[in-house]
Figure 1 (cartoon, rainbow, N blue to C red):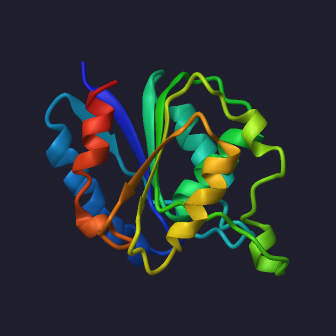
Figure 2: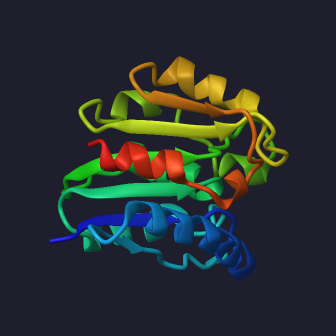
Amino acid sequence: MQKQITFFHGGGSLEDYMADEKLVASLKKELGTGYSVHYPFLPNDGSPDLGRREQIGREISAGEDGVNLVAHSLGASMLLACLSETENAKKIGGIFLLATPFWQGEEDWVNAFKLKPDFARNINQNIPLYFYHCVDDEEVPFSQMRNYKEQLPWATFRELPRGGHQFDNDLTILASDIKSM
């Protein structure tokens, strides 16, 4: 039986989804035949957070126990928000977050994406949690990973010297971490 991966894309448009397809292709290639990668399109539903928390929650509920969750950029921050704000009956094998923004500021549009102040208390420390960020990311500053290191010290952090926001479309390191579990 194949191990299940669900990958949540960044951004809120079909263009963003298509850009992240290259990340998904790399992950599939590196994982090989023992894994099944589900890649749902999460359209902007017009709500302040683009509907991400609810959409992600539905996808997790529809998955198998032991699913590994992978998310990029906005999808990563919304997955973390979903996991810290809602009860989930599914067993999660691992959480792998790529170029995760740490939303700050007081603008109305930012408030919809922010994590709650106590989010870290609500993340299950028994589930492996990985963060990946490229130093040369031009969209989500590398410095934002520091906030996650302070809040989630038990997580594993992978700092890559280059690859930009899209990791040069190479998720070899992430696939290696998934295979090692």
